[in-house]
Image (cartoon, rainbow, N blue to C red; front, side, top):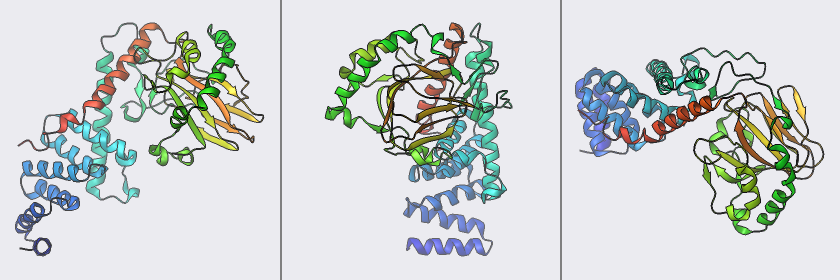
Length: 399
């Protein structure tokens, strides 16, 4: 029988109130049209309502296989797992993938135009995600001594605790440590390594100039913000843009071995600084290029457990950084450290490119034990996220 005829007959049966017959016909259609994600999604929901719960899981799994970038598919699959299995971690995994694909998926209210069923699943996903990740953090930190502030910290987007930021224009987007003293800009006099870094700033600048003459280094230039920032309300204009470029020496704790040989003095200088890290390497070190007449819109950074440090290398006139209510002009070779949890922006009003070396250091108030606790929580969360896909391989098919 022609597959489209099967679908027409299924639709007719549903219209006549013959739900079981319609479902049987829909099953036949999907077996002959295995790439129709919308139809598999429809079958999964009908299996939950009037059919077979196990078959519903298989249909949700098939829908995800066909449409791996569809947040709704993961939302509905996660809901099926939440209601029909004892593996809450697997449900949280699907919800978290849905959130990565579309952050609005956990906040679909009446104004979203979504169906009541989708809104309900969105609420359930929001509640489960907040509970699961908050308990995961508390469990990870429960046996760490002398780190109460970190135990009380919140993964902001999935916290089950109410956020309360005491500072004006202060709102870390990812991780927040309450009771940690903060200020927008820190004097370089607070850091014993700042003078040494200042003394080699010309060497670092020369290394960059020489490296940029090499084709390999030019090929390592990348837009600082990837396409995933296209939905960021404040930074979308610079997503995948050549107006704000970067060359990475370290990214996510990994050394860029393709170009590291060009920067011996820079790497030596960085090795003498207590940089923020999750492994043995600095988490990030990169050269930042802001093109002429470009601005980075006011936005909040990810967390208050680290400070952002700028070493200005090539600074035209009429360039400045604003953090909170403080405006600060870069001066070549002079270290500038700030807490990017405060609303901050950068501006280049000149006809030349602004160049700074950027890296992160630990927030000075954090103790050794608290730093270890932050590392433990971040690494545990990253490990869970990296493994979430593999644990789902057979769960939705399981009978």
